[in-house]
Image (cartoon, rainbow over all chains, first blue to last red; front, top):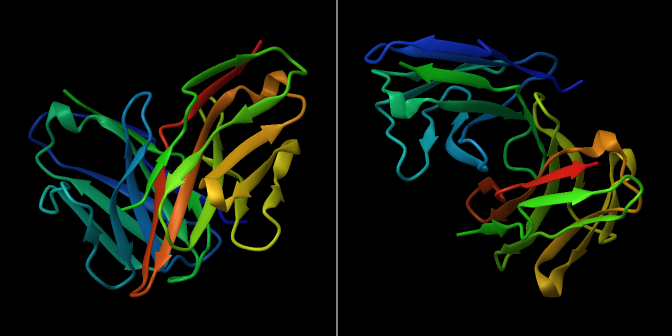
Length: 117
Length: 115
């Protein structure tokens, strides 16, 4: 149980275009989903927290107009990288937590490799 | 703000050697502690977690970790590593505070290779 999927697993796009990444909890309902970014040989950096039906909470330094997050249902959150630039190339990972507010671990997706040319 | 530091960035061990990876955090309040593992080409998986109770926690694949509150540490151990333990290991802290704050902060990771 507790499987999180991401789609696509990798994507190449041209500079200036937008890319949407989906994160789904396959066998549980996720009240909260998280989006992370991982640079090569570095740790995961939290970008934003999204709760179903409400606006995402972005971490300091993350542009909310560039990284649009939608958490429309308890099993789906999307991250849209708008007007992508080469510096947005990275590994994007989502995770899902079952219950809001409690000390529950997060279940991670396999990640999406974004390359902007 | 909470922070997590992992002292060893790269560790190389021989099979059957013992493993200990250090993790220290900075936060004065209540914390939940985790160790995650990322095998080559795979996603993050939970190895073990500490919420409360016995500070020595046992996880999957023979791993264990000890929470020492006075040292703000949560070191990961395994008595005898196998080649299949080659992976990157991340320590993470989830600090809880009044008002609903609840965020997972990761350490920089330790690349562990078994030869």
